Amino acid sequence: MRELLGLGPAAKPPAQVEVLPAGAGGEKAMQGAYDASSRFDRDLMTWNPSHSSADEDLLPEKRLMDARVRDTMRNDAYAAAGGDIWKNNIVGSMFLLNSKPNHRALGLDEVWAEEFQEEVEAKFTLAAESPNNWLDAQRVNNFTDMVRLAVGIYVMTGEVLAFADWIDDRGDPRPFKTAIQMIDLDRLSDPPTKTYKDRIRGGIEFDKRNRPIAYHIRKATNGDWFSPDAYKWERVPTYKKWGRIQMIHVFEQFRPDQSRGVAKMVSALKESRITKRFRDTVLQNAVVNATYAASIESDLPAEAVYQALGGGQVDEVKLMQAITQYAGGYLGAINQYAGGAKNMQLDGVRIPHLFPGTKLQLRPAGNGGPLGTEFEESLLRYIAANLGVSYEQLSKDYTKTNYSSARAAMTETWKTMQANKRTVADRFATHVFTLWLEEAIASGEITSLSKKGPNFWDGLNREAYASCEWIGASRGQIDELKETQAAVLRLKYGLSTREYELGRLGLDYRKVFEQLEREKKLAEKRGLTFTEDDNMMNAASGAPREKEAKDEKDDGSEDNTNA
Image (cartoon, rainbow, N blue to C red; front, side, top):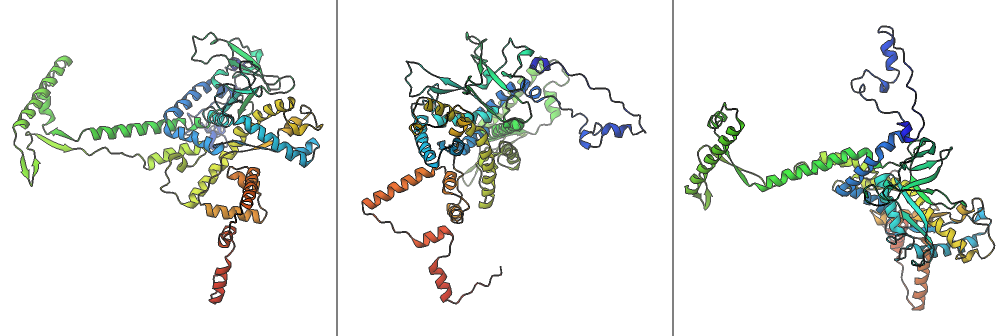
């Protein structure tokens, strides 16, 4: 297996361990000091997981696991909702650039940094969010849509792969040449001609220091058997010679030397499958119960029925004929009796008189069964914990939620989403922004660099120019008054900044300030005056209202509450 994966020759078998005889401490020596390593415990003796490398454990199973996760996301509403929660809580409706060039590392002043920041943000946002979808090589998605797609792919496969294309085609007039081509992870695979010396694992080629130097991309997907490119692979270097990245591969390692990513849903895939089958079975049972309003049951003893069917016969053909004959005759007799029977009435209600030996069993309408009970809740909580979201968000069930529990659940979800935002969305978006900025600077589009500045391609200048943050989805508010009061108090006592507080709401503070200034000037021009309500301002700041404080003093009331 190691040779097939390109990990080197097969490992030597472990040396034989000498087992001491019973009575000489042999069993204790075999068991070890930890119960978890016991080979004699009934629950652990058959538990022998693999102890291979990260790639040996992952790569042979990855294709099947990814297919199962995608199938679950397509056909399970809760799993699909979990993916939407990730995209809506990380990216939101618009992924905004907050450029923050490291002017100190570049040896420039803050005036230049502010000028550069405003120009770059305006030009990048104009191109990135254009309805013409300039950043997408296929011209299908704008920048925000591409980041949402990247997050969705990460949920399903645990990794994101994209190619930084350079489109210089007269038939496709573009304002700039940089374009991003998203690549299906199934196309990243080992070419059939690979050998151990090629150092290729999971479609990625590594150097002697285990750095990815090239990616082998199949030109057609696995299902395109009749495509002329079905059996062709293309080797794409990770970087250009001057350092421009070509292959954007984003994933989180769980073990050293891990070459590919794995979806978080994999560990809960079995439970998700069982949950869906449970819901389907219960719903089908409810439908069947709702189909039949009543049934007629016979009290004839089983022996009589068996004798009537010709008991003792073993010929299956004759037995089936006897069953058909008996059932037809019995049901025909019931039909004849019921057709000629007279129905009694009691206060206008009809009371049927049934055939002797039969009784009427009324069936209730469709019953939901255990759907929505603690059993299903426990399964959904397991899946929610695996996805890093709250049970309430996944199930959309807020019937047992109060403000405190909702805040706690939202806080934990927010931590998970922020961590994954930095790992996936921010990293992918920064790569795209750096590629665009490199072309813009090289073509002279950034006028704030008209003065002689450090070379973009020297040292870490690329990282200094492209340093940025990203404003995604807002955290959301449950009680806007309380949370706004908390934000105002943090600003009042210097515990936060307006940039941070507005960023939590999904807003860019500079755009907010510009709009406030614009509105103020327009109001002054039109002679409009807006009176501030002192009580509302005091309530927002958390300070006691002066009128209420004065009234309490005049009444002579005292607060005797002990501290």
